[in-house]
Length: 348
Image (cartoon, rainbow, N blue to C red):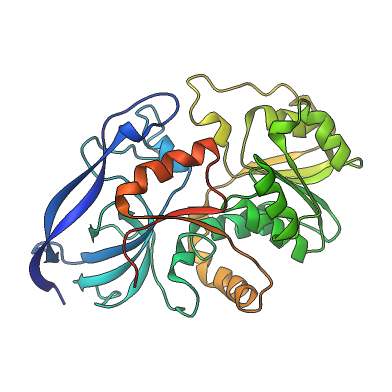
């Protein structure tokens, strides 16, 4: 069904211009236009959706910079809506795989209504007995990042010692719980007492510490891992990575998910302990979750029962209203979020 054609207002969060350094709310602005609730002629596979939940993710800041590798990221276009992962409801469709009323998750615009013409990635939501917002996190891109990054990139074994930086975020909180399900010893770091308490008391980490209170990260890791680290799930980079390397065990593995400490620097920090990679035979592997999207059903088969049986806890940090999207996104980089940050555009 191509849609009713009714004209409605469409609030959008637009990208202002390319900047360097720390992102600001003023790098974005909110405007309202109009849109017709139909798929226009000429878009034979187009889908019109009403956006419900938008995901705030660190990689989005990379897309606000002009000097990025187009083979990995496409920069935002000034004057156009931001793009990111979201959960939406199909209002009109010319695509054979999506019909009116379907719930979906994938890449959408930061706006109330989006016309979808590219479907990489775009998934129909089959299981609605869990909160739809979970498809921005535990059942969406962050969940898949945690699952495949840990189980496939890290190749964990029962009893191994696992360290996770930025551990209270959307990905880290899940990696830690997956590791505990494997029978590993798990330590996480975060940037506040509230987050440290969350890691230990809700997510079941064996230990956690506030990295801001540690003048010597190398020494801190030595306290928590006197026998060394088998697996490091890397979310931070810079000084944290440099401190981890001397604490790795023989044939340890480092899964490089992200380096949030580096995204806002004009000149990235160096890493000086790389020689330990050689004599400790450490394997460092970067990965991108899109490489695993064809295995989404396998992921759901594992994670959905864990949620339903209460084996995994998940914490969301929710901002209400699209107009609060810029503040929510920028807040990621000052540690304001506790858990998975998302913006509610509309509720179903």
